Structure formats: C-alpha cells, structure tokens
Amino acid sequence: MAELPNEIGSKKRGITKFVVLLVLIIVGISAIALWWNYYYVFGEGVKSGQLNYVVLKGNLFKTYEGKLIQEGLRSRAGTIQSNEFEFSVTNDSIAKVLMYHSGNSFDLHYQEFKHPLPWRGFSPYIVDKIIAMRPPLK
Image 1: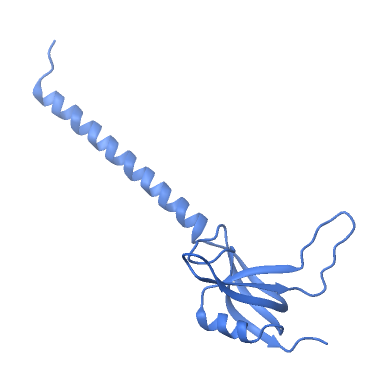
Image 2: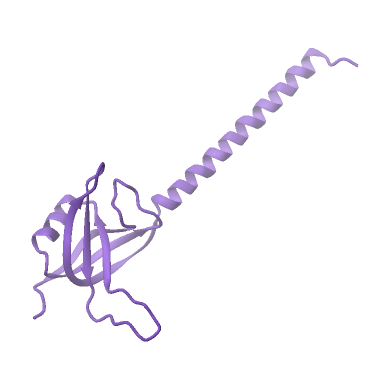
C-alpha cells in the first residue's frame, strides 16, 4: 500500500522536530557543563602568609601569577603538605599592589574554580581582594 503525500510530510515534520529538540538538548547540556566547569565559583576563602612573588607572564594571554608562602604549616610523618599557595590575579590594580609589596605578609581572599581558563590565569585560584597587609615578621 502506497503512502499518501500528507503522511510523508507529517513524518518528515516529526523527524525534523525530533532532531531540532535533540540538538537543543545537547547544546543546553553542553552550555551548563561549560559554565559548571569554568565559571561556577566552586569555593572561596582566605589564605595568609608571606608573598613570595607576583609576575606577569604568558605567551598569548598575559596573566598575573603569584605565590604565597604560608607560615606554620609543617609536614607530619607519612604525609605531604605544601605550604605554598599558587594563585592568579585578574585585577591589574590588585596585582600591582602585590608586586610592589612582595615580601610582606598578606591575607588574600580568593575564589576557586574547577578549571583554569587561559585568559584568567594558570591557577584555578583567583585572588580578588587584599584583606590585610603587614610588614614581614622578623
């Protein structure tokens, strides 16, 4: 039995709607996954210690990268514990203050992302505020 032209057109419309809906669902899930992995603030906190350095580096995207040496952390037998906090800075004015006061003790507020982005820096930790600055302990 041959199909009528209306039935063929109806089937094509149904398949087209299904494909469009499937593409929209895939794009939506991909957008949510992208946002979750690269733009969602996973955590935030404050780190304290002596600022070792802040430098501007990168090949294509120049970003400010720094290292804070935390005081008072010691490794125990059988464990590994780092006392270095490596971070990126996206705000030029915060980066310049940190660069000019290298060696001082700082309390830095940071945001943690799941993954870094090239234009945001090498680290998933982004310093967004300087809470306190003190001269180094002698």
